[in-house]
Length: 351
Image (cartoon, rainbow, N blue to C red):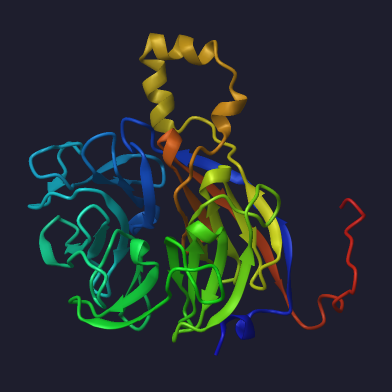
């Protein structure tokens, strides 16, 4: 069964406005990925301009501590420490037990830790045989409990049991159907379909659980539906597909059929933490007063996007060291609440 078969007849897309910004450079330095956490908060994987860490923020932008990923170096004050040195962590995911698995593309390993930083398991070795990894860039657990890995430099998706036992693999270097070229972002929906941000081919590909191609769209460029090295993908309960278009500094939204709907280029204001910092820093205050604000709103090299259980969209704004948050407003429509499909639709009336 596919996700599309469970969707309503149609949608009224009311809007998708910017809501708020979380984090700032001193808290969320070069954010890579966001996970939803308890009490409407988030966990943010940050590579940092030095050591890497996971920062916990509340929905009101309070610093809730986190986990330091470089042993002995504390970017997170009063945070937990992991007794292992990560080289270049690229992705995090909750495992079925609520622990955090971390992909490290620098040493081709997968490490699972508790929320207090205690190591549960660590596995992986570099290579190109089945079960070996070469720069894993994205991970996610499916509802089947299996771990799906974007094995980027091997140009494939690999699937493992929780303890690292190899299950299956699909994909190979190329530009044709079922081929991949440095696959990056990865998502698995509730029906086992696998979505891959095909970085090198500038497209989004959707596969079934066995690796057979279902849907492919995109192409190189900066127009609607085109990509410049897509780095992330996520899908919400409405079937909408969010592709983080890294090189074009935006996130693009597509419906379940791959039709372009809209884009997000950034609308940020200062986060609460950033505002409090600016008020106490006279030099920073003067610099902001003398600098055009418009460019400061925009996304810069966004890495990934995450949809929360409440429909909020969290964008890891890597180059601006913050998380931009949007809130979807949409109405599901039944059989008798929307007209039939049209051959050449044009929305010409402004409502």
